[in-house]
Structures are given as structure tokens and as C-alpha cells.
Length: 361
Ligand code: ADP
Ligand code: MG
Image (cartoon, rainbow, N blue to C red; front, side, top):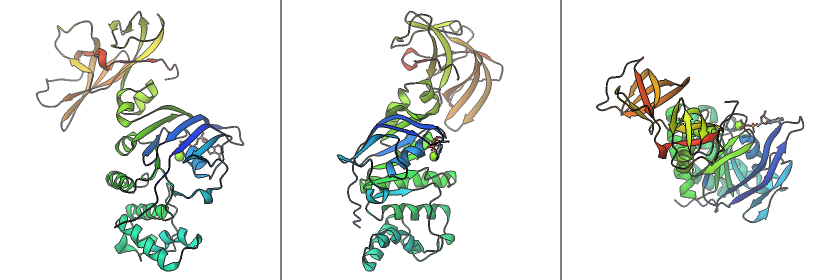
């Protein structure tokens, strides 16, 4: 089947700020580009400004200052209905009294498309989201996953130039969410449409996106491919928000960092002055557990709290320097470990990241 949705276009945001009437600053100097045909995830904790940014992109909210450029044209002041963007809301916002087909065809009827064409187009889209057999059903007779497919088909009906989704999976249970993530990604790739997905779920962002924009408190913390953001988090916030990270506090001495009385040597020397208070981070799968009593005092002392065998991996929860850390080991051939055992942990130089300490954390 050939369902053309028109090619998506790239979007640029320049110096976008938003302060609401009550004085709340929701966005602080956002500069981003969303490349044509790619799926970008806006990721961050609740309240960091994701929905506000998506609504400004959609034209449902205006920026206090800043510029939006779509495919080379300035759309900053263009009204929402002229932008021709498809939007899927967290609540789906379907029309409960209309059939599945009429929900999808609705947007076309307002733009004056002929009835036969409307019907054909709605059925093509429903086929795309695997709902064609249910076209005559009422919305109330659908499951959560089916409603979401209707919302997606409806958003695509007008051949949108941008496809915007705000927490599209949040009403679905865990298993369905994962299925829909895969389906949505396949659909987006098939259509080649420029897409922005808002989510607070790092797994969802990692598994679907070409690139991730990590937001915190109204600003952009980091952008990059899922792999780049995971392997080189630029701040302790990103390191702990994207996946798990073992974080310990330290102080810089020359090219080393002293952590719990042990000197660690990061492979890229920290660019901090002597005496700077820093946070060091290392992923659980890169953190090495030493159990033999001879183990070197170059490693950080820790005690075992809990051991969890989860299929192929064993997670060991530890206390070290008043922090909880996790080591992820292969299950097979794992040594006996019991709560209270004294061990040492190694954060290898090449897996060690050094961040400025966020005193509030
Ligand atoms: P997110 O989608 O990341 O959870 P939002 O964009 O909804 O975050 O909100 C960002 C911040 O802006 C929050 O502090 C929120 O309370 C505030 N906010 C959102 N909408 C309004 C509004 N209409 N008036 C005042 N403050 C708002
Ligand atoms: Mg939101």
C-alpha cells in the first residue's frame, strides 16, 4: 500500500524562552534542531518544560521570545491550523460519539476534502495502523492500544509536515507500551516523517529515537544519539537520569580524584582546579567487584547489601561511602556473596566520569 503523508521537514528552534503570566519560567533559551525524517525524543522529569515546548512547536502556545524555522521558513507567528502538524495527546482526545473511521476522517472534513476521498484515505490510514477491520466501531468499544492507534491515524490524516506526540504511551500497560513503541518506530521510519516524541521514560526514548534531547528545569542538558548520551553523559543529572549510574563524591588532586580515601585516575584528566569538589560516576556494568581479601587498597571499600539474580545478570547492591551502588555481573559462575560481606569496588579509568558536584543532589 502506498500511503503518502508528504515528506516531513526539519525544524529549528532559536533562543526560545517561555515565561507564563504568573511568572513561571518554563523554558530558558532553547536552541535545537530536529532533522528532517528523524525521530527526536524530548526526555526529562515531570515539570521540566517538555509539554510547553511541544505546544509552542504546535502553535498551541506562543513563545515569550525566540524563533521557529520549519524547512527554512519562519513559522513563529503562524497559527496552529495553518502549520499542518499532526498531534497525539496523552489523553488521545478522540470523539467518543463518532466511529473509528469518522474520527480519522474528521480533520479531512474540516479542510473540505470530498467524502469519497476522505473515506478512502481514512481506510488507508486505518490499514497502516492495523485497525481497518474495526473501522465502524465506536471509540468506547476499543481497548487502550486500539484507541491509541486511532489517535495516530487521525494525526496522520492531513499529511502532516511534523508529527508531534506528548507522552503517547502513558495510558498503556507495560507490555502494550513496548509493542506500541516498536510499531510507532516502524511506522515513522516507513513514512519518513519528522517526529518529536515527549516522554519522561528513558527506556522509551532510548528504544525509539534517532536522537535524544535531555531536559531539566526548562533548559537542555544534553542532546545526542541514545548511545552517545548513555556512554558519555555530560552531567551527573544525565548520568543518573539515563540508565543507572554509581555516583560518589570526590575531591580533585592534580590529575586524580580522591574518593573515600582512594585515589582514582580518570583516563581523561578532570578539568577542575585542585581541591574542587566533584562527583564521579561509573555505570553498574562497568563497575568491577573484588571479593578476595587481598584486593588492593586502590579500590573503594564497600559492603554487600543485597544480591539479586535476574536472568542473565546478577545485581549486587552495595553500601560505599554512605551511598548505594550497584554492580552488574554475569550470573554464570558468580562467587558466593552474602549481605554484610566486605568487598572492594573498582571504577576503571576509562569508565570513570567526573562531574561538577551539584550541591543540592
Ligand atoms: P512537563 O511536560 O515536562 O511535565 P510542562 O511543560 O507541563 O512540563 O510544565 C513546565 C513548567 O511550567 C511547570 O513548572 C509547570 O507547572 C509550568 N506551567 C505549565 N503550564 C503553565 C501555565 N499555563 N501557567 C503557569 N505555569 C505553567
Ligand atoms: Mg507534560
